[in-house]
Length: 87
Image (cartoon, rainbow, N blue to C red):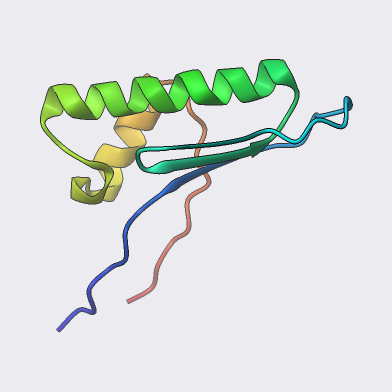
């Protein structure tokens, strides 16, 4: 029997900040940290677009299979790091 998974969350990390301002945004199923104003705003827009696409499908992040997650992320021009699991 498989163990129950925890709640899934998209995490965005911006590394191009040079103005010293700490930017943190939390939303439904996502947490964003760092980045320049432009980078942080772009991450916000992509996460909002991602959630809007899920809403149109009647789904939440926790409902997606890995392939579907990757498809929706690609539609939003959202690069994801993928962790392969060996079971």
